[in-house]
Length: 138
Image (cartoon, rainbow, N blue to C red; front, side, top):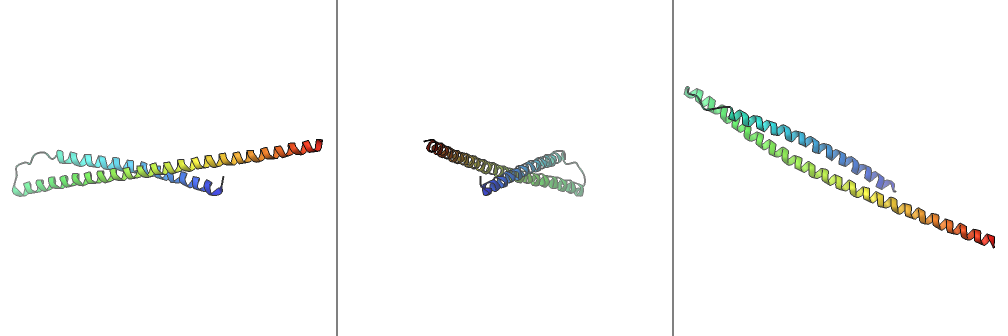
C-alpha cells in the first residue's frame, strides 16, 4: 500500500472523529437551547393574569410580560438555530464516515491487488526454479 493512501486513510479517520465530536457538541447545545426555551415559555405561563393596580404598576407588569414573551421568542429562535446546526453537523459526520469507508475499501482493494501480484511473482519464481531444476536434472 502506498504511503499516500495510508496517510489519506489516517486523515479521513481523524476527520471522521472530529465530525463525530462536533455532532455530539451540537446535540448538547441543542439540548441547552431546548431547556432554555422551556424555561422561557414557563416564565411566560407563570405570569398569570394582570392584577389591579395603578396605571404605572399595570404598565410595569405588562412590560415584564412583554420581556418574558420576547425572551421566549428569542429562545425559540436559538433552539431552531441549534437544531439546524445539529443537522448540518450530522450531515458533515455522515459525509466523513462515507469518505472514510471509501478509502478503507480502496485500501482493502489495493492490499488485495498487492497480495495477488506478490503471489503471481512467487508462482513465477517457483515455476522458474522448477524449470531450472528440470533442466539441471536432464
